[in-house]
Image (spheres, rainbow, N blue to C red):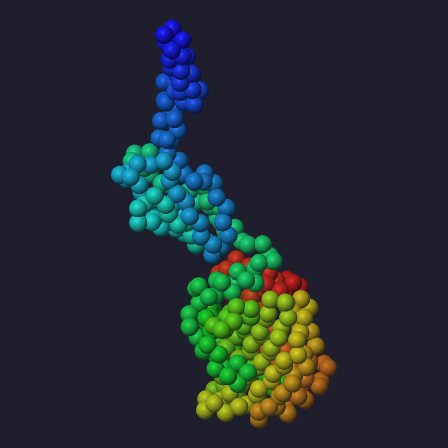
Length: 313
């Protein structure tokens, strides 16, 4: 009888020991600390560095489901902020190429800040960055390049004036510099200028295009002039790759035009053969590149030297 009772007591003691061994000891201090950790409201980032055209998602952590959250930016010219449907997160997008702003999440009466710094992407990524910029900000355009109507997304500068020596005479050209990305390609950019001039009292449309690829090669060059009726006055094209890193503000590498056609062709060929003067095509290309470089620097914060024209300074 005693043995049975002793065994029962031993079993109860062992069961109690197992319970205390498995179950953690919860102290009042532990409960308080855990509750405090759960209630600590904070932003996912206190500071953030982003590059142009790349957004980032910020979120508020540890808020209640009914928490009232309002997002704002201290400088909307640098970054904008768009809240999600439940307001617990927001997308921060850069507007300027460089600068900083404070993004604030106001939860109830308390504010939580994140300093956002916008910078230009590293040089190695500038080509792709510009492609993405044009693709996102450009408008639909169609240009006749290489004899084909090419649909593009393009950023076009305000109209400007320049002067070139066309057929031996100073000729004023009024036109716009462009950066375009063919809609079916993310590996090439077309930069250049389209404009109008007057020759012998007749209106002339003139354009110059350079197609640049991500390998820092100018893969296509075209100079084109037509009259008001669309008659070909001059078309000079080259498909021979040119090293873009050799291009400077005052000179282009030797260009071999594959075709030179139109009623001005003979005069242009003769001018190109004269070593004492720059030929019309090279001169116009220099003006076209200068126009787009100026526009890029003024509006995008970087120029041709950052997208493959390494010596264009």
